[in-house]
Length: 85
Image (tube, rainbow, N blue to C red; front, side):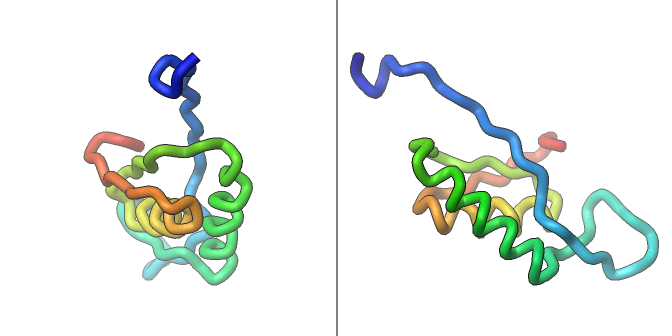
């Protein structure tokens, strides 16, 4: 079976630990903490053997940060998409 015919797997991950600018938890805000950045890199490490081809992220800043850190470990690109929650 060639690579083009192999079954695809889709992995979903939640963003790493985040902190917020205000006490109001809003969907679009938040920034990863030091722990959250470590969690994102660890996610990339855990997925290294899974042949990840690309990473997609919602537009939420904490999700984008997580995706970018994990993708950097994996050596793949990130696409940010509207409508992913």
